Length: 153
Length: 153
Image 1 (cartoon, each protein chain N blue to C red):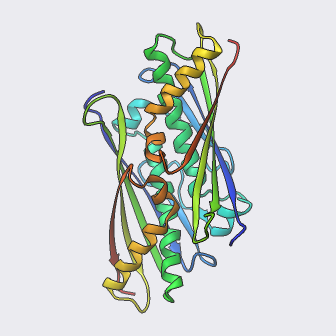
Image 2 (cartoon, rainbow over the protein chains, first blue to last red):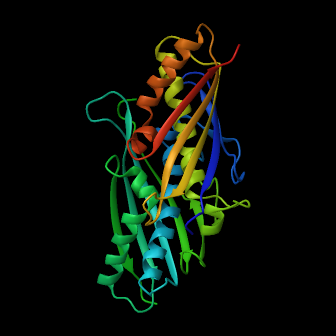
Image 3 (cartoon, chains in turn yellow, brown):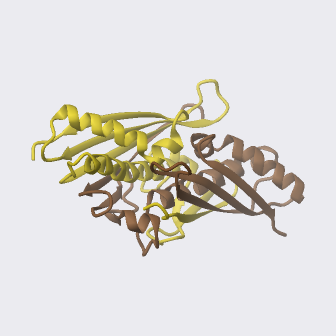
């Protein structure tokens, strides 16, 4: 692992003002989504099928944390049968006015892991969160809340 | 705008260890992508069509910054004909060992904006970056580099 490294790229196009304009976003590296429509209204009110920076942050955080938690478990000798991570990201006007902010990312984790009890599962969940690169990219700027539930195998 | 707020959600599933396991990520709120395969190898080496947390952060940052920059321009009385923002996100082993980190997000912006010169375009680009919620979510954890180029209309 020591030498692995990567760059990943995406592009957004926008026309017009924030409130009346619109745009599209494309995952350049892989093309897993292309020219997906984005608007301010869909970002801050009902999504109506339009993705947003916050949904994309949620997807980044959920996928990153699933990997980080799997690593914490495997390193402790208890690889996961399955982990399921849902990230919920909040976007709100700043309390003092003057723009918006990403306020929180809530990680809800359910897992099936042979040989662990709920306490050990929660402990590994917290260790995984500390090592998660997306958590560390958001740390101190976005509130990260972690809720881990061990399911019976 | 003052009362608008939103929550957005995504889910990742993972089976097995970090190095030998694999998973899928889904944009729950909109379904713009579903069950997209993810692996550690595809995250850190050639992507081979598999998205990753870093590509998703790049898409979040590009789309958020395009909106924030459009707002800075429109507020100054010069709404953009078009902005195109590419975000390139780096993922590397930590210098001291012990895991990986998201090292940088480079924003490359090209724009067509009537009534502005390159200096004013760059100034608005910097102001937009300061107001960008995804930039502010990454601030001080991830190096953000901004390169803005005004194209002739």
